Amino acid sequence: MTKKNNRYVGLICARGGSKGIPKKNIRNICGKPLIAWSIQLALKIPRISRVLVSTDSEEIAQIAKQYGAEVPFIRPDELAQDDSPEWMVWRHALDYLNQNDSEQVDGLVVLPPTAPCRNETDIENCLDEYEKADSDVIMTNTDAHRNPYYNMLKKDKEGYVSIAVPFPTTLVGRQKAPIVFDATTVAYVANPTFVLQNNKMFDGKVRSVYVPPERALDIDTLFDFRIAEFLLNESAGVQEP
Image 1 (tube, helix red, strand yellow):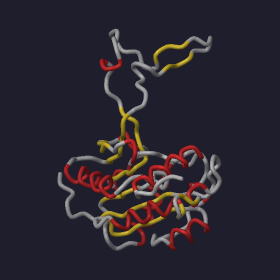
Image 2 (cartoon, one colour):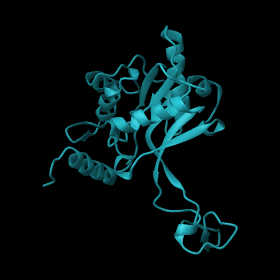
Image 3 (cartoon, one colour):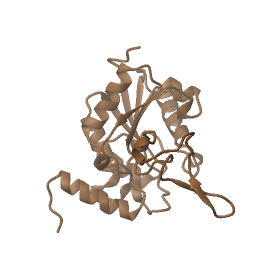
Image 4 (cartoon, helix red, strand yellow):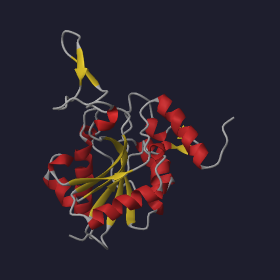
């Protein structure tokens, strides 16, 4: 099934109530707010016709608009809690588009603001994969740092540890373990109809696109911020003091 010549809308989900790092999505990194990196990248992709930000924060909304994104609605409080499923935030944005946009949306391109090291090629590769395969969702992955079949452990109630995912036969060496990947937050491309009719990503046909580790960092801690600053400065040719 071909999806060529489709209309894509970019979506950046950025709530204001980050607990780990207060105001994480607008924290300055290499000279601009974190969310600006995702907005400016999305605006460079020719196949993305609009870039929307879904947020519950007026402050984030104003900054997003300054960097060229549309903020046509403020996300309701029930979709801005710590345990609010982001899938429902995607659905909320699609409902808005269906009610207010006369043109059909053929693909939703979700770019979490916490992955500022991604580049245009990563997004284009996801769009290419979506267009060439019969998929409901395209996600991204990178190299796994640990393998649950070999060197990841679980602990039982008595304190004893064992391999997280036992393999039927004895594995001699990490190289013999099945290859696994880390899921990343670099990008998602989703079929809007699938999102509206299903409750989670893996209910459908999901394919992935590989992103190298230096572009797959997901910022969750202050330590991640430091790593991202180093990587962004390095890619821009700025030497660390």
